[in-house]
Length: 481
Image (cartoon, rainbow, N blue to C red; front, top):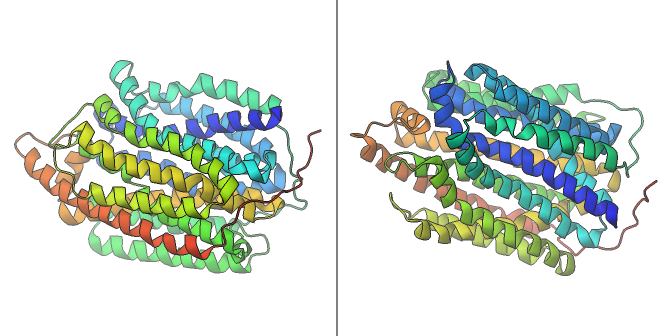
């Protein structure tokens, strides 16, 4: 009884820290661009994208490694790497260095994300997993939004470097606590084999797509070069699926998708990530960009309704889904989220905090209703010895979808705005005389982006309803030595 709550508290701290760092940089980007030498708009984007991309690339393999060498062992290693990476980010002297050190952070975050859900699933019985994973999932999304508020406060008071330094003491304590207090409950597999071909092909494909989208949207490479680059990336992702289907020890175990409940939950996860991945990014620049130019702290306050509603609804949804099954909560969450995004397609250039709160509450509540029951259904559907890779697949789909979502957002913005206008929005440097015109075009792009998000969420109803979503049954669990 005591051990499972020890697991939950430690993994929640881990996912909270890793998710905070996903967005804490977002608020500070204009300040970093002004104060850190040799930092262009493209480098600013890759300070965000590099972290998300690398996390997405390593997650599948890290989930596989945890099944081979022990989930707790690699989880503790991830905490240590994340802490070191945070310190290095704080000491960065150029934009390129910060991009590189964010990749070190991403390695640690990959170990944390890929193992947290599996460690929780091992420690909790099936009839309590929805609540436990709900608390953990709330920490991920709430941490991402809380990072905006914390980033605004820290950047405005002690400087942007401390958004990274603050992780160091917390990470040191959490690493030592995890090493001393967590135990392996699953037996590692024998004769480990790593799917190096799959790793390289997946990383290359996803990277080429994002390079094409980001550099093409900013005119850093010509359109005639961006299109074939993206096509090659897409082809490589197709090759990756073929490789995994023929690999004896694949990083992406396609056999798990023969389990109907797992396949439905995983597909719905990817579609939701595509819909919601750029949600915070867009709202941050809607609030801080032209023509509003709110302060980082004020912009963070506007986003509190999302995290607050998610924090309230998420655990309740997980607890109720343990008792009654996940399907009604999954469907309700998707419909409510879609309604919130459709509402956001009507926002004006100067919405008040109260006027923006209602659609943000709908989006946050929908996220809370959907996330934890869907994650619990996914993890419960697979055999215990495959939960590491299943957890990695789920989190990879989240990170991959969110990363591609940012790329889709840039494509939509580039179809409405010019490159100088996009750069002005990203750097917060729009001139006063042109801010109204830039803001009008950006608002049109925002409406289109949120309409696409609503459509993707409604499409997610198809795999959700197709998968068999049932209430969990009793399951024997290994004891603790």
